[in-house]
Image (cartoon, rainbow, N blue to C red; front, side, top):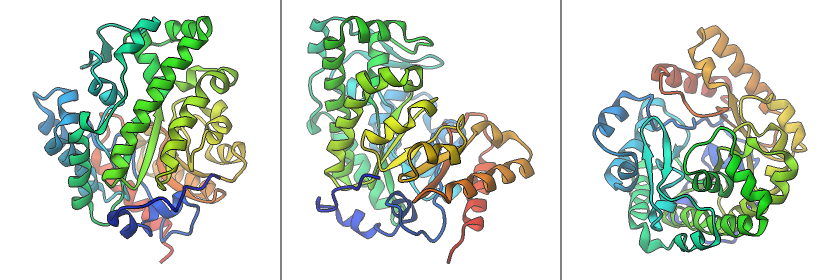
Length: 358
């Protein structure tokens, strides 16, 4: 397990939160209960979120501190989770540097002019704090409101960002992405290097404003073989994680469908390995040598099952998580929009009850 650079200067807010269960679990330390939060906990499953977002475009909602603050806080108030996840989208930083991109309802990110040639790289300048003052303001507002609850910063990993930019939008098979990766590997690496710089800068802004941990999210990495991941992707994710490691906060690394990549993702520099629902958590712990904290990994679909089924699966995952130095209970992907929020609230209470060590 890698260890954050604890000599890096912290903020008063982070110093105050040093004993928060999430941060202790991420460091592999004993906790008073297993911490729990949910990917996409701030979002479409909450009626108060839908009411707030009505008539407001996604990118606009990610750049307005009043909305970001309220949306991020909503699940903390409702569910009593052990962490807030910064409300954003993985394309926010590339939009902030001037790339023409929009988030189309029902489709996802759509790029006006995809990046496929060397000349296109000029449209991806570095991200500087002056381009995202709203992000700094949002984090500061959140840290002040959250009190004893840590805020997790959020950014997309270089591969997933590159896939959107090369394909022009979401893709099932990533044909253009893989063709560029293998057909012009130098251009591919130069593109991912720029995206790593942007993602690293975006996370740095959040940490310097007070975020206590970060999650690097690689939505599409599961589409790759391990050989392709190691050669074409891991070095760029490692660059982001190494840069954030100097800031002394825990780093969570999560990807969808990445069971075959877990060992490689761990060695990229994470402190906590996010495990999706396709892999048994105990097996995942073994794949990373039992030396990393883990996060996960209840199947989001099981939130629709009878309570006795959900409770049994939760007990199983909590038991499996005991084999790791630290365990953060989460889903194995994001909360589905149709999820009943009362089930999430009840699940948080169950995890806290079952793991109470006070």
